[in-house]
Image (tube, rainbow, N blue to C red; front, top):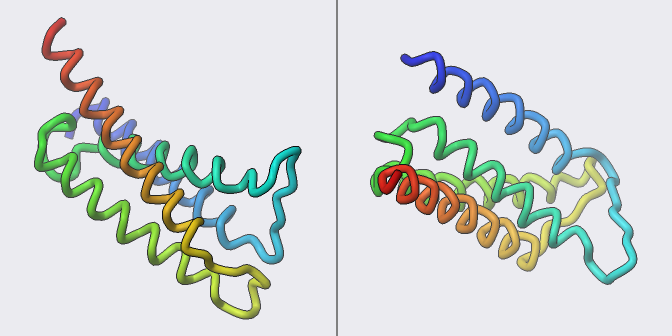
Length: 124
């Protein structure tokens, strides 16, 4: 494994652990100047998760369609698991379809960002 790929994998592992901790922190509430600011955080957090996961190149070259497709599928499944685990009563959290939708939008944008970066790097 190349040094660069190992770096991406470490970054992803650390980020995934931080994200999991944040999304399961008991009774966490996010307030802001607009209604439901947490939806924007879901998009950004899961977008970063997908971009880092895709950069790890687990399923082929980082910008290959297979890697992008599997990254997207794993991200969508992980987002569902992450949201579902928030139903554990001891956490004092709740699961919501709009949260899950924001997660999926984030995963999709993260994969699209990797695809665009791959296309730009091939042109350069």
